[in-house]
Length: 279
Image (cartoon, rainbow, N blue to C red; front, side, top):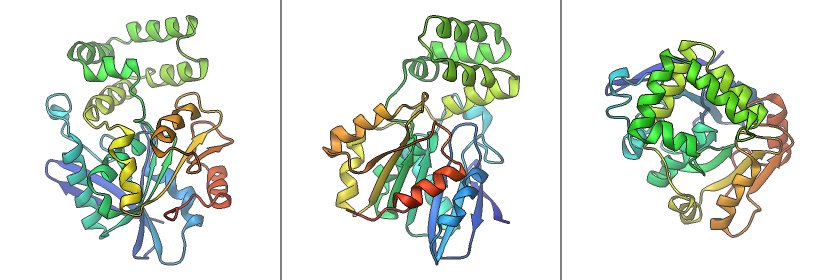
């Protein structure tokens, strides 16, 4: 069983879980709507002397950012990095192997950009943040869009009709449409979508803001994309390849978007992508 820790950082609270007692830390950040406990499938990948620490992102599990500040003053990149510094100091860990899945990948990239000296390796899995989708830009990054999103939390009919129309017009794939409809099925889920999208709207970087730091600081790197992922398709790897000028760090697993599964653990081990070494 993992050891659970609740940590207060300013007005926020973080929940994280630790497996193992080794001093070499693998720090994992999950995706939207997921849980820190999803990373338990990767415990068999730990080497001797390693521990896995998985953090519940804000507004997930018992990690909480003040609700009255979600819209008015969400954290920017520097604030997010200071929060994660506090988590690392609590563990404690001077440097970590960083693993980010989906939304967690976006947050991991931001940490590398500001704290490369605290990162030994970076593994991105189906990472968000390589491209700002027009719908996200509208609903999270504009005042009118945020107001509309807040309205739809309590009045979901408009959102349901919009998603169904986008599917009918083939502007949204059926698979992604099913995910969207599922997130609209209850007020609790609609609020989580609104809160998480709004909360993280200021944490965005371009690949060339952090990729050059990998070689400068000797950070091992791999990026894994699901071959059948419709939410974050593997073509997103091109945005990394354009900066790196080669693709040997970019891998495609024969899976979809849900990569935190046993099959991925075996695949990562076979492709030496877990805690990658500098190249």
